Image 1 (cartoon, rainbow, N blue to C red):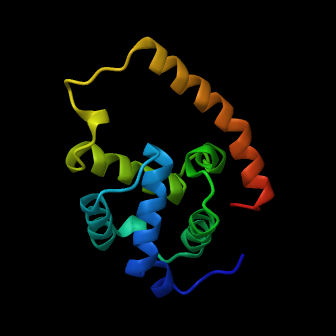
Image 2 (image 1 turned 60 degrees about the vertical axis):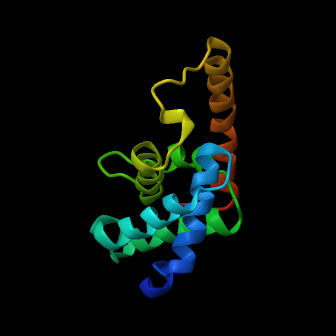
Length: 144
């Protein structure tokens, strides 16, 4: 993997594609326009998301690969975690989740909606099946 120019990494088109794919990985549906706009805005205000050190650029290349190849970001993310520091993919998934919870008008975060036991069990089964698949994707695509 080569390290890309930081201007290419942070272009609005790249960040928009990233927001759309990460949102779809988390919620299995298209990202609303306001979520994409807030994601772009956050990148202009949160330095940790746009740091240009070598490690962050390599992590950004991993994210670009995930977005370009449309890989399952939520399955891969646990395998990219390191002790002591958060991988950039983790930070960006948390950002998408935060945006959706606070200003994305997602039904999942409305207080009047509840999940039944069957839904919770299905979510748990899906998550446990994603773990081995995520490990496979990490090694198959040589993600760091």
